[in-house]
Image 1: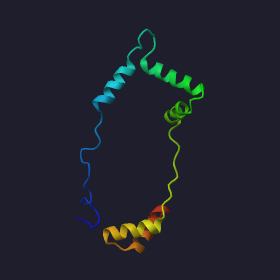
Image 2 (image 1 turned 45 degrees about the vertical axis):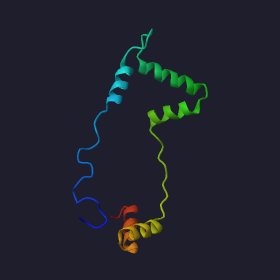
Image 3 (image 1 turned 30 degrees about the vertical axis):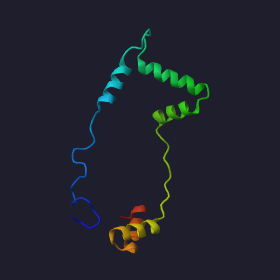
Image 4 (image 1 turned 90 degrees about the horizontal axis):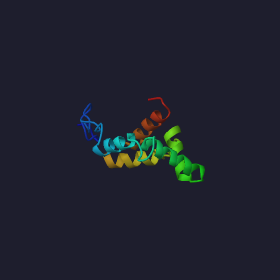
Length: 112
């Protein structure tokens, strides 16, 4: 095993992968596909319609949720102090901080 690595190279920490479906998700999808009680529309249609109405009425949380589902979440900038993080990781794993920082900077600049 390589120093500072919990798994052998090529060995996955989650060999089975993420489960494809869950019982709760399946049940929610089934219920959303059903016709809404007393309506010609599906429950999914009714939920979407209600969210649109709430957004139009000024509900910012509803508007944000709609935009995130339609447009995707905006990217969030992440700031990392490379030197500080290299020192922390080096101390934690008994590695050379300078070498870690150089590697991190190469990766960050797309040169590694």
